[in-house]
Image 1 (cartoon, rainbow, N blue to C red):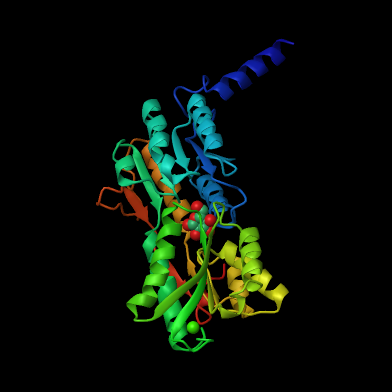
Image 2 (image 1 turned 90 degrees about the horizontal axis):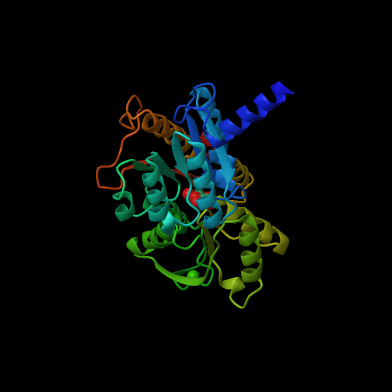
Length: 338
Ligand code: BGC
Ligand code: CA
C-alpha cells in the first residue's frame, strides 16, 4: 500500500516536472520536447522522424515527439505541456509558419531555448528571442535545381512540346500556401524556364496544406480528364508525396507525362528506377534531423549552438543552419539509395 502511494507520487512528480531539479529527466538526461506538424506527411514522418529518434538515442538524450495533426492550436497546447513538464529545450516543426512569433514568445516567456525546423519563421520573428534558431534548407535552392533539371530535359526532348507552340504548358502541385519551401519552389522552378528564354503557360495550380499523396492523386486525375488534359506537357510537384499520387493517377488513366518532385524519398528513387518519375531533388532530412538534435543539445547546455559540430550558422539575421539540396536524376539516383 505504502509502496503504491509512493510510486504514484513519483509518477505524478515526474509527469509534472517537479521531480527533476529544473529540467533533466530521472536519469539526468537532457529532454527535448519535439513535434512533427503532421505524422501523415511522407517527408517529415518517413525521412526526419526516424533520424530525430535514432540520433537523439545515439547522443544519449531523450526526445519526446508528438503529432500536431496539422493543427496549430494542437501544437500550441503541446508546447504549453512541454513547458509545464520542464523540458530542457524545444524542437518545433510549426504547423502554420505565420505563428512563429507566438511560438517564440511562449519559449521566451519560459526561458527555454527553441530550435525551429523545416518551417522557417520570418527574420523579424527570429529577432525577438536570443535563444531561437532554425534548421532547414535554402528554400529557393530546391526550386532552382528542379527547374534547371526540367530545362535540361526540355532541351533534350524528354519534356516534349506536344503542341509545337514553343511554350511549356505545365500544371503545378504547390503544397502548403505560405510555407517558405512551397512558395520558393513554385516561383523558382518556373523562373528557371523564363531565365533560359523558354516561355511557360500555367494550365493549373493546386495547393494543399498537407502536401499529401491523396491530393496529388485527386488533382491529377481531375486535370487529366479536364478540357486541358491533353495539353499538359509536364507535372511539377513541389514534393515527392504529391508526385506519388500524380503517378498513380496517370497509371490509372493510362497516361505518362514528364513529372518531377522534391525530397528524394526512397519511393521516389524506386519510381525513377521504374521510369515513372523523371527527377527529384534531395531534401536531406537525415542531416536536418541531426543538426536539429546537435543544436538542441548545445542550446540546452547553454553552449554556442554549433560548438563541436560541423554545422554553420547564417549571419544574415535568420540564425539558420541550411542543409544543401542535390539534384537526383535517372543518371545518378542509385547514389542516393540507402
Ligand atoms: C518537404 C515536403 C514536406 C514539407 C513539410 C518540405 O520541406 O519537401 O515534402 O511536406 O516540408 O513542411
Ligand atoms: Ca507547348
